[in-house]
Length: 484
Image (cartoon, rainbow, N blue to C red; front, side):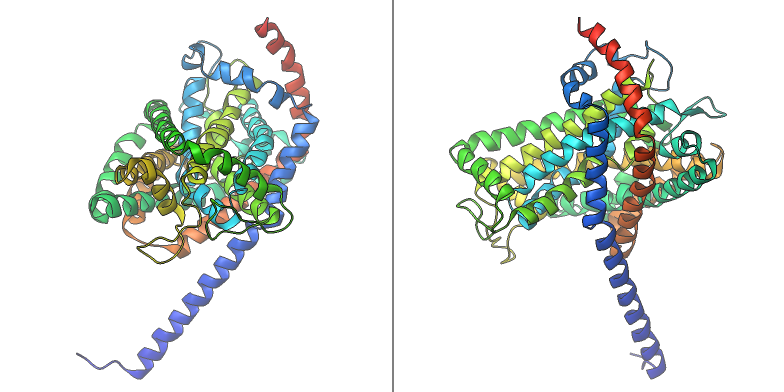
């Protein structure tokens, strides 16, 4: 072995210290941007919009769900657009229903106690209006590009909808830039790594093999653009959601004796000022503040209400009125948090595995390991397979959905659609990097970009809240007529 020159060793140690310092700084910034201020801003904007809209998003939720599931929503018979209203919703859901619904819920319940689930519900209730508002505005201010495709999203709303055009242009550019960065990190590499890690631990498939398969599949679908992505999403998203929900219901029914105690524990920990535990909590003791902090954070991260990302896909929908599609896309928050996240939360709460020690690690069950342990109480070893399949389907659909978000943001920055194919190819190849490498620094940086996307979007929503309220109230006559 050759001797290492002392100077070289000193330089290497210096670089390692610099990288360590950079990683700590990025982590500190990440913690700050996803801290209490951001969470209050996200939920607070939802509260303001809900009140200004006269709670119509809550009152019309049954109508919105019925419209979403109607045959007409699967056609392009009403209005203009690239894809059907249902396809626009499932493509948006493809990006939002991800590992957060499996891993994120478990993480929230370990860090904030079982009561975190209640705060996920509360944030989702106000998130309905945020999601409605950003999607409705995206359709209202969308454009048709040189290729004849719809282009829309918060960046176009900021550019065209805000009175101060210079301010709007700056906000739009910042949103689009952060969306492109986030698409490669949160929307791509983290998802690919989640799939590769879970498949390797459950089935023993190497990271490289998984990476190659994911890259090939992504490339085949993504090259076809929004129409190919929406076709796949409209099949995969309903299938994976129904599959996971059914498996979760079997777990809940299998542990039905624990369900009343589990529900009591959830509400007790959600609203208790003092730190409390419970028979089904194991080693976990948490207070209302902890439950609220982690519940809101994971809820927002899961359904992306207020982030502006879903609005980019909503802009491609065929519709005769922006408000109508706003209602349809709004239901994404309901399906994501109120349905899928609730199934995970109740499965964990009723299983008795929350706060228990994992024999393999000697520490408490965390993340996907906790969800797998909960499912295994009924399914045995098959529980791990079901959760792994769920993670793989959820994460892969997120890659597809986020590609479209990033592509349209990239198109906005470039001022033309002509570079979109380059973006699609690069995005697909980056999937392999995510599947085979652990790039924590890149992930944290993209997490920051994801949070910074929200700031311009929330500012825009608050500035246009009066316009949103007028449009939703004007459309109420149409809803009343259709109900009759």
